[in-house]
Image (cartoon, rainbow, N blue to C red):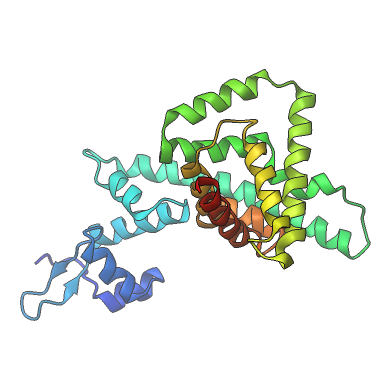
Length: 253
């Protein structure tokens, strides 16, 4: 064994702010494999393992799945310095987005207190065409290039006025979905809203049932998208996932 500093599971978990159970799981799936104490078989983590755990936590923060993280970290000739620089840029971009979200939340609070006026569309700035393209990058990774290329083609065909109208229409769908939450995900009111949401997606591409279900999961699982939905209503994302699942089940019937 090396004479460098070695950490037990408990020590590393405390230092990194993760649970011992998480480290055990990362070991089980081969994502972060420690050395073993030859005397008792206990897990021991060296400096290289500490750096790898840091990369795992960075990539988790950026919304990658564990399988995606494995593919990144196990690339041949991984340049750790370059990877860290990419992390920094991505985190700076997220910081800027969160700053905009915080400002919007602050303005909404002031609006609800009657101190400022705020137009409805200002509450839905996260659901503009630019954000839709971010959704589509996720779709590209999950389902392939076809939908993304089709979306770019359709987006390029719209005028500025048309894009603004599409944005406002999308905002209206989400507002109506919030209003439908008390009726439940399977109600006629909710399902009519989901049908409108489905139709609205056709401005960008023709969504398959798989993509509809995938978006329902994406809205809940991706931290950036989840933050946008929570900004509208804390229950909107899980409500939409249930409503989409019910909609797709009957769409296929």
